[in-house]
Length: 138
Length: 138
Image 1 (tube, chains in turn green, orange):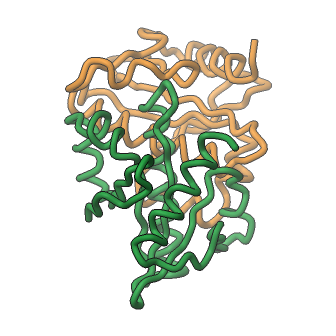
Image 2 (cartoon, helix red, strand yellow):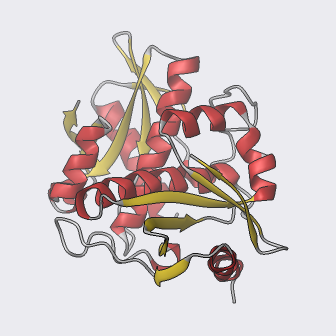
């Protein structure tokens, strides 16, 4: 499996360990034009539920050499999905899942924090080695 | 040259034909943390001036099979650069350059128009065959 697929499964297991039920993997959202959000390949989201709470999770590894390029894509994808969810599944909250290592390094940068705050990105921070969720940041 | 590089040069020549002087290619913006926006590889912006007006141009081809994936990246990159420009070069206006074909098809979709409007993406539409700028959309 590619690094991307490994992290996808890690986040999936971390959520399950935390008591969440995975309801859609991948989560397919049809919005306004049917084909818009279904051709994302390996970038697909998963959906989960726990005690009536519903979430969608966008998984990024930030393993690539260029974290900023990954961040461009993560930000755009988050905002596009958030808009789609508001239209189609307004009860579902979107999170961007990132490894704790990326949270401590790349996401500690002032400019990145500024963007996270400006666009209100919700973060799900996970430990890929222990396969547990470390923190939810709303 | 790759398709991406070809389009980069096409936009560059289209701007020159329109009376713009290319001042930076690529445009490097250092913001808060020095290394943040300089490692974008082929995704780099160019900067131009004309009669005192200053612009930065993000060039996307939308040639890939998955236009929506390209759109995720284009949106995130636009918003990150816009924030960086506001901090470092507030007099410069950012445009996303797209081929007229993509403007007529992908950008005509309702969801895409919704996002363009919500995040106030400024578009520079160019004709890659004639190598001219077709329209500026603010």
